[in-house]
Figure 1: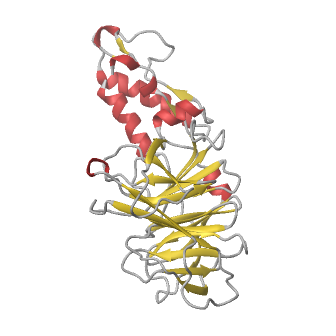
Figure 2: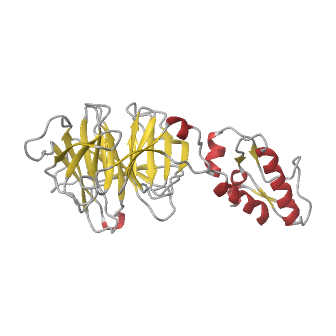
Figure 3: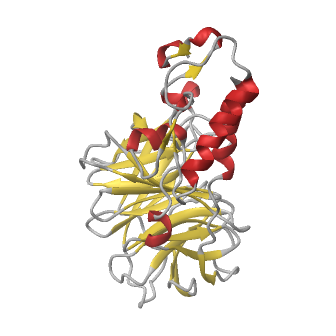
Length: 353
């Protein structure tokens, strides 16, 4: 039984080629030495707002698609661990001071700013128009580097290193919770299949797609019924090629703009991410993406003989996979959702596993 299972796990890793995003330009290292968050502006659609991670001055940087600096604005808010930027449907910018890799900070904050005019210099640091603080108890001191805003609430994507799916946490923004009366970050769900540490997120302007990145991966989720976060479905999964460390992601029409730490901007085109459906075994079966379905059954169905030879099982299973791939389409790998043969012909159902 181990041979077909091994074959099908190898396919998981080897079947999906990595994609090299299109390089757009490099940040000025004097201005954006450690880019951590990015969001597309509303005043000018050709402007993206970028900020640096902790250890850098609190500044909001307007850059073009080529990553060249247009203008930098000082912000009157402390940068303890800024991790992501977001924008709402009224064009207000949000900076998420939400990171905490070491789990030491009990209070975290989300600052709101009016979007400045990138063509006009500011007189002094920009002051936040609102600040919302949320508390994390000792037994729930989660880390986060991803922020989106919709209506009067922020949604955080947690950053995990334990192989479990990232959580979605909701933080109410209205009324703003002051420092001495912080709100909480309520768990509202998980991101199906996102088991990498999440480093950035962005919600499409219509609220129907959520893009989330890790340092070398991008996943896109369909959101069927906004404003509800129920029923998220992964529609694309792209492993990235190259030595960039992706820390932020932003929608640009249907394209995705990636911001890298100690790097610049890259584009993952709509055609690139749309051509990469999820490769996860369970998700491929659940969402019904194109390609034939492969199971661990004997050819023609029926039962494996008593005391089957594992080598024969592996050969038969591998042969079926090879035939399925002849047409150039990736197969469905559904064995985890169906059954595996055991000696005596008994099969393991989902409830047995």
